[in-house]
Length: 226
Image (cartoon, rainbow, N blue to C red):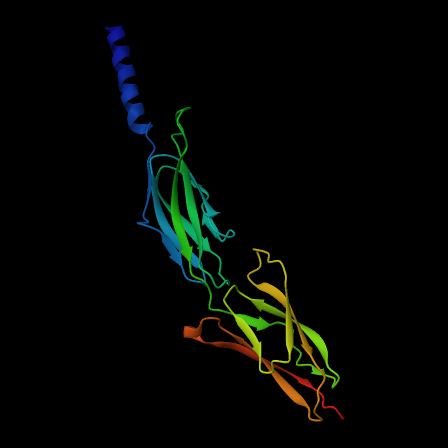
């Protein structure tokens, strides 16, 4: 009888272990397909339901990291996970993911499982401009000057209203942590054959003919030939 009692006790313990210590970890979230943010970024809260402990992190799929999650880990049950996206100053849409890792903590075997939630963030409006334009006046015999052009990754075009003005561009390597790309323009103007002071206009425009848009106009001058 005593032996039967211990056998029954062991079976009861095993059944309780199967009920309270699951061998098949499960994790679900309240997200149906994906998360989306506008360019300004912000916070979104989702529900994480599981029968095991889990860890969470924001990962980059294209580009650099712009997601953060809190808390970074949770236990079994229903938990709220807060996801923060930083502002996207770049023109293009960017993607990332929230990665959730989980496994049965009560067994020494079994692979860690993973669930990823795709995240999309819209880009900012197109922005391109000369950062240090001083509207110089060149001498009558001609000359050149430089100016830094910045843009947020949009398509752009540049032209001068006088075809005699030569423009040379030097691209500066872009750091992915910097939202703006930089290039240095050198403008060269030949001698002024006239005695009149003249003005030149540099136009920055969209490169898409169907969406023709002027981003900015910049002027500079040249003295007359006395």
